[in-house]
Every structure is written in C-alpha cells, then in structure tokens.
Length: 534
Image (cartoon, rainbow, N blue to C red):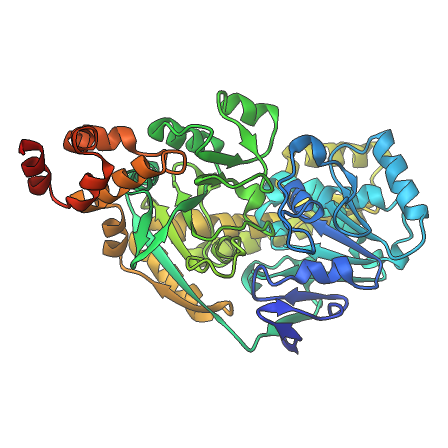
C-alpha cells in the first residue's frame, strides 16, 4: 500500500484528479472524492452501485449557492442534470428515448461526465470510445458484498475497466487483503494521507429483540420530544435497516404517521406490497423526524440534519440486516454531512447474536475455500485442454449457468476460468454470520480491532449501560417540559401526547384548569396537586 500525499481543506479533497490505474483508499467517507471526477477537466465515467446515489448527485438538495430544494419524484429524470453542469445520469431501462438522449449528449462539444450504475458499463461501451474516457468505479467494495445478486453487473465492469484511458477503484472502506479477488492482484493501492482524523463514538447495544428496542428509542423521542445524549438533544433519528419487512414491523409497533416517517428503499412492486399503506421516499425528499434507510443509501448518499443521530439495527435471523464493522459501519457514520451536527460521528448499533452450533473456525473456512478454488482450477484446465465440440462446450456452459452465481467456473473469451469472487464472498459471509455476530463479546472485540486499524480516526466504544440510560422512561420533569412545549407549539410538537395523557393525566387536567403559563411554573406533581386544590 502506497501512502499518497493529498490536497485537502476542511476535511474535503481538493485534488485535480485521482492517481491512475489503481485502487484508491480515500479513508474518509463524505470527503468530496466523487466531486473531483464530476468537476475536473477530464472526460469521466463514474460507475456507482445504486440509482439512489445517481439521483443524489444529479439532484442535490443544495445548489452551488446554498439554496435548498427538495425534488419531487416526477422531477427526477434520467439524462442531463438540471442542477450540476454537464452531468448525465444513466440508470434504469435502456429505452430508445434514453439512447437518443445519450447520443445527443455525446455529440455535444466539451468535457463529458456520465454517472451510471454498474450494470450500464457493458451497454455504454457501444456508444463511447473508451480510450477517450477515464473511469472511476465508486464504492468498489460492493463487488464483494453484492456479488451474490449482482454478478452480471459486476462482471460487466471487470470485463471492461482496462479498456478505458485510465481506471481508479475507489472506496473509504476497501476490500480487506484476505478477501480481495485475484483480478485485483498487481493493481497498486494508494491510501490517502490525511493530516486530520475524526473521533468516532460507537454505542453497541446487545438485545434479544433489536426491533423492539428500536421502537423503544422512537417512543423515547415521542415522550421526551428528543433523545438527550450527554446533555445534547437529538430531535431526528436515522435508522439504517436493510429490510423493509422489519421497517414495517417498527412502523406498526410505533404507529407513526406519514408526517413523522420517511422510508428510503427501492421503489419496486415487491417493496410496495410489503409496505402497503406506507409511502416510499427518496434520499432527496424532505427529511422527517424518523428516517428509515435500506442498503441502497448506506453509501455515497448525502443526508443533511442539524440534530440527527444514526442507528444501525441488525437481526441475526435476517442475514440481510447484518452489517460489517470494517466496511458498512464507517460508511453509515459518514452519511450525515451537516458539519455543525454534534452527532455527525456517533452511531448506535442495536443487535442480537446467535451462537453457532458448529466448530468450524474462520481459518478452517479459509482452507475449505482454497481447496474449492484449486479443484475449480483443475476442472478449468481439463476443459480448456480437451478438444470439446461446440455442443459439449454449450452443454458445460449451460450447467454452469444452472448453478448461477455460486459456480466457481465461468466461460469468458472461449475459455473456462475460475471465478474466485464466489469463494471470497463465502468467506465474507462466514466472517459476519459465524464470527462477528456470534456473541456480544465478539462483536465488541471486532469494534475494538477495527478501531485500532481504521484510518478514519479514533474509535471509542461506549459501555452498554450508556445506551440503556438513553431509553430509560422519562422523568416527570422531562415529561412536564415536553407537554408544555406541545401545548405552546402544537404544530411543531405533535408526538407523544397520547402517551403523556395516559401516564400523567394530571398534566392535561392542570392545563385546562390552570392554563399553560401557571402550569409552566409548577415543576412537581405535588405542586400541581396543591394548585388544583386551591
């Protein structure tokens, strides 16, 4: 790994361009790396993992003058951005209309900037001269994380990246060395040498029922009007949960209304059926008090909030919700971009664990995968050296396709080759499900180890008691203050009135009998009772 002296200002990269033909570990999330490719004088293709990220860049909430605009769904279209100069957003179906827009854009003079999802690279090659463009593959660690369901899109990038004028794989959380696929062997890796580091505080909370605890946090916000962390009030919550089923369970438990929540997930038929009765939003819609975010916005997407606090919710019974400590957590911590937010580098991780019922160690699993790769290489050599007929080759390829993305073999350029990405993904999945989330102790130890090696900054791991105290039932004085705020600003404070009325009916009675001004001066139940008696 090569240390790279960078140009920085206020925690942002101000380089003119990236090093070429390499992997670039930018170290910090939200440091403006993508902006370099979007604004410099080079023709760039920026390949990103999600449509959400494209819309976030093409339709930013703040324009260059700092004006705020929340873009409605019908206003967000593929093609040329109405905000960012000369930026073409490419995603969704490659329709005739989209192809025409792309051809018209490429026919114009000047520097070209195209931001597209991974799956569009293969198609894009038909319309461009690759040697006239540089390519930036953003958040490339997703090649490992998402290979099980995006193998075709990822293979499309890997098949073409060397054809461009230059290439750069970039991430703040690069693929660990022991999980790195063979295709990256020999590619130099640079690491940004920052002069400043961030202090990160993680609040792990182990529970048997993570979603009930999540609901309890929401109820605490409702009953107190905020969450008090070391004397500082958080009035918005961002829940990162990669499961719309679990999000719906929390919404049902807390009975939040549309005025209170925002759900950011893929807007497809399956999710619409699951979330029937609830509205799906986008990252660039106006924020709400409670924001629920799936993995489509774990990375690269910018959120703006003055008091928002991030929560991660993981359930071992739903493996899609399990986040990695070295790749996912640093990405999520960097999502809120408001510099003045006191919770910007703090995160609450609510999780459960499930002890494994077997004794396979991570080292054992590494050996198993190595043997599988060796066996696959033997098969590839045998097939390539045999004079198979076209029918036999076709039959073998069909057999590989039946296995799908779990096959160690693939057929490329009339040769059978080993796909070691499958083995790396098996190791990654085993590490998360059978090692990290095996116990409270193992997860905390992983946080400590990651904090020691994380170049993002200094990690502090808070004791569990701290989190328990955050969701303790509010005192009468806290409830009294929140109730008075609700009565004084009924349009601003709309949460928790029913719970307050059930728990302390005396407050409602005193409000109607004594008035708000008098009630504000009475800080105890005893004082209120005395005033009512008078």
